[in-house]
Length: 259
Length: 362
Image (spheres, each protein chain N blue to C red):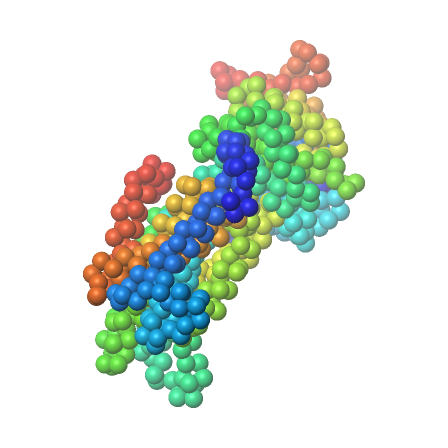
């Protein structure tokens, strides 16, 4: 269980997060949505220890303010929006960096993780010669080897994903979301910052909607995604329907013409 | 050979295709050791006099006493010079590689970005101002004052440079190089003021030192530089995994459990210590710190676990080779070694710039 209450965060005297509360359960995918500048990524950076914040936050009972770096690295992996490398590493070498502080560093995980993200055979390629989408999937493989078993020593592990599908094509978007869903199904926890509301509705058991640094509402996709709430948050007219297949999953249509 | 079978070699080649260059890196390191051994023998054998290393070795093996002249030339002139060249070369190459890892940039070289100049200012201050210290204190610290002052100067410049060129964990290449120019100019000016006020004896020391040369190598100087350089070389491998993590950026390194702040402080101390000691005994020798890590990254990849030890060996071999060239080309006189490394390193640096023009976001 990830539990954050009353998170305040300022960068250079500008307050970005105002008393944000957020929670995520292991075994589920939890998505954070909201317009640009609403504080989604900032919240994720606070929860992953990248930015200092005030307020209470615990991961499976451990106070995040006091968590040890190596302990954390064995509990949760973080996928950033994009990662530039300083030196010409091969794909194999990049993924292997995920094992840097692993409790049981097993090099064979590298090939397994690359196969899982659909990049088997890319081991010897240079990272900087890949496309943006391929680089993003290499980074996902690196994060996966870091927290390969979704449950470790009886406790869940966590994946924090910052816009994991934003540079991917449709097929690979589904593939990455399926990996997240599988990780959750096997007992891990997933927190993802998302722009795509339809993928969010399809995969998230819990959706948190943010607006201007505040948490508007957190609940199921059906509770959170209403015409009125999304239209207000995103500043454009939005119509929410129910997907023809599967029945209960909402889908979102922006109404450009009638703005 | 060297514990590597032909099967290992075959595996290294296939692994190279699978993206794991660990075996390749070990083979390159072994090759560096062989090169270093050959260069070391050459450095002892080649010189302005006709003293024969082989003759001397034969004498030792057959139990015959060496004559005085042979003993002095080989054991008190060529050997300390070889040892000092190896120490300085290893220190410069390793601190270059560590600094490039710290700044996440292949162009960060202590000589280029003002750290060498800062260490120089420390050394010059010690030479000129040291004589003003109470005599008791002078005799207590004696030879150690210059290297530790150089270390302090290099340390302060590195911290300043890092503060100026890094914001939010991102180092700007342009700001780093420009800040290096500014710091170099400033420390150069301060050094100039000190030189202007030096007395005759101090000026002789300064000129000798400023040429960038191994010519003044003695066992005393070797001992003076040894503690800082040995500490840096022993500490470097412990930073390797952290520096590997840092290539992904500070945030990603933190997520991997790398103690980034501590890693940065230790890296800066290491660079300052190694460069300070090297500058204190040999003056400003440039380009080793950029040429050696770059060549090794091309040959075996950028993994710091292999890069740092290999850089120490290749740096030592390259500087001793440059010293042999400096001693031989205008024999019986000799060139300052700084000229030789600049003649090789300058064009090499331009070549790196040409190759990386598109990726340097300046």
